[in-house]
Length: 471
Image (cartoon, rainbow, N blue to C red):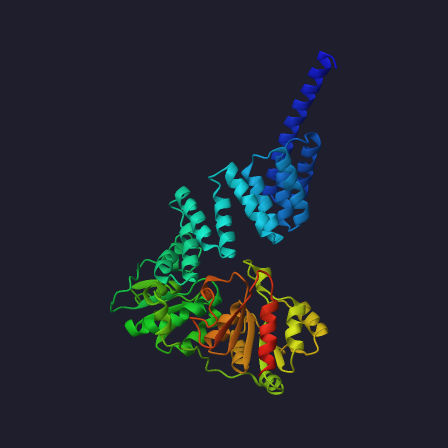
């Protein structure tokens, strides 16, 4: 090739490279305006012009990750890494793909590679710490969090992450103090009004005026932390409580000496002079295992009766009446925490008891599959809204002999009512259930049945089937 030809080729390469960069930038702008199809077209045109430009591959990987097409996302991330093996973000995002495919060891390697390239890659530290926590290597998880804290000393997240590990392992005095850091960036999400409060946060000392306690996060948190209220009432009688509207009747009936408001209610001025988040009560009343053991569990109660049409359906059932729930719709560990329809059918088919569907959400397809697979039948109560009509759901629970559920709202609802509740937990469970214990420290009559191996429910199902055979 002569000199002029080389110059022309170099000129064309530079020209195409500039076009490729411009197309990639155009694609990013189109994404910002929600024009996904046009953006993808730009990225693919960019690739055609310059096969050695990694950014459009990476952005296509991000798009396919967003729509859960993990195979295509992985293909584009791998190509981006082939072109530029020195970009920490590429390894990190590929790690997300491996995590969603439950390839945990591969995920850890990718996050470590990301940190080799960029030791300050805080997202990799955050996710790596969580992975070690889920593998129950708590020492490594705390070390990773320590590195994260060194990089971002003012970020409350690594401190909050530490708190969950300490509480989970029974180091309550350390854990609850660190748990407060979750209020700094709304990780704990107290109900509306908490962050605009003009009164002072309660410091745990005696005072004569009203104390407003804000419920926080989901229904489960309000129920489990609500079990601390009897201890608070021994020290402070003038208590106002703000909770999810669906729980208002339950808390009113359970605590006649507490003024209860729903989350959207306006509380009259002058009714209180201090406030606190419900979970924050634990730093005063749950600093040692003995604090749980010495506190008498007060089960919740609802002083309402079932409508006749629901009562008739339940009273017609034979043998034990068992409420069952198998699914969570929470984004965190949804797949790992839930049972499949075939696993639910295995429980139903193992005995002749009557099973009542207490699974909230749109599960019509699940129920159809369970009943087609099972020799027993799962009853769905007519005209009962399992998501919003908690008053009637509570009364159905009270009319059951036993509740079998994964870790979701029903677990807390049934256990807080004092009902015998078998709670099915994944290998790495939520911090509220602690580690390696069968009875719950929070609730009487709750039995924790844990996976022995990550993602494997066999031992849990076998224990349930065996126990039901002995009833």
